Image 1 (cartoon, rainbow, N blue to C red):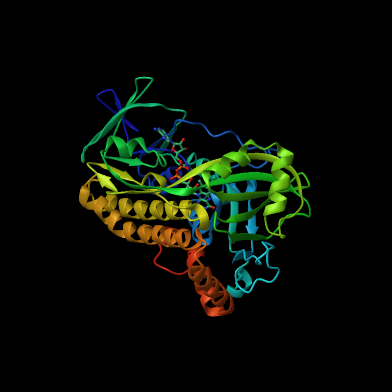
Image 2 (cartoon, rainbow, N blue to C red):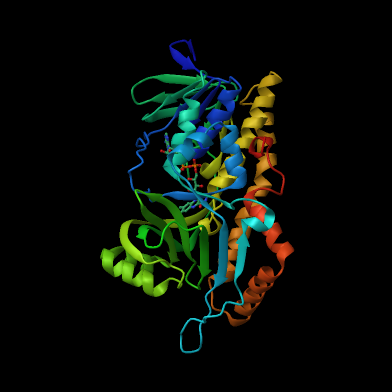
Length: 422
Ligand SMILES: Cc1cc2nc3c(=O)[nH]c(=O)nc-3n(C[C@H](O)[C@H](O)[C@H](O)COP(=O)(O)OP(=O)(O)OC[C@H]3O[C@@H](n4cnc5c(N)ncnc54)[C@H](O)[C@@H]3O)c2cc1C
């Protein structure tokens, strides 16, 4: 940090020190670029005896490699993660009387051993990932972390942007990165408009203590009101936990939220697939309205967006932060190259390279999730037949299953080099 006319000057100002913002700061700081990160909240310190947080994410192989390259994975592993080796997907089918069909000709099982990997990915609490990244960036001399910090005002220009905090301190930078989530203040201040659509379904997440030990499978059963999903969590003090995700229409979610703990457990057990382990206790539940957002521009006038500030997608395939990490890796690589070449980091030509590299891939993933959402959120008979045939065929076709697995894990496809195994 240097001081210019009473303002503290960094090359890059990052608003939002969540998973994506902290990752960009680590990548730039490793190359000695001077970065300041601002977050309005300070994450709670980790303690091994804490019960699992409500917010968890399935991190892909590519995200794991990225976090390893940022020296954050070692800290994350020391806290806690839960590897999952298998993933099952099917659509619930019912007999005319309403009873669920026992046989599942339409089930697809993904197993990491089929592609010679130990696991398909890891379920990690968002706070644990964020804290691992913060530990790593705190070891970098050129990175300053300011949290909690409230931003009072921002002004952007391609050469020199500035932000002022509520305590009166002013910071200047050549570039402002908005990694401040779905309701990004940077996006709004920069005047970047959104393509926005609410999904009809909402998503309820519950952390539960389960019987039977830690699981190595995640599963998702599609129903016409939305998927029912199970994510394993690590054991804590000899007890096992899981995150269950229940997508449904807003009126049903609001009814579920009002049930007593025992009523909720009873309804969960009655409704969810037979695979659901016995529930010992409900620890926490919450719900999330779901919306698809895509920024019409990723950069404007010396401000650039990454992660949820640029796009939010339906979480049904758990790809949100995995895409955000690819944004982070790609943006960092482009900025590092530009820095070496002596280009100004806020230059629209530099930032245009990032948008060109990322927009299409993000759009494709969003559209694929939308296609899934629309294909499964109805009871139209011919469509139901086609999708079950497709699931059944996919399940029976090993090469297709392997390709889907590799793509979802980020093993195949065009990845930034920071997200590849070193
Ligand atoms: C129910 C659910 C399940 C999901 N499951 C998965 C999954 O399994 N896998 C997956 O990849 N993704 C998943 N996602 C998506 C994932 O949670 C998001 O993509 C991810 O959190 C985005 O990270 P981010 O850092 O871009 O934004 P955020 O996590 O929103 O972080 C933004 C940060 O900016 C800070 N901030 C906000 N405004 C300001 C401001 N004005 N000033 C300063 N700081 C500010 C916040 O405090 C926060 O720390 C899921 C989402 C939901 C809703």
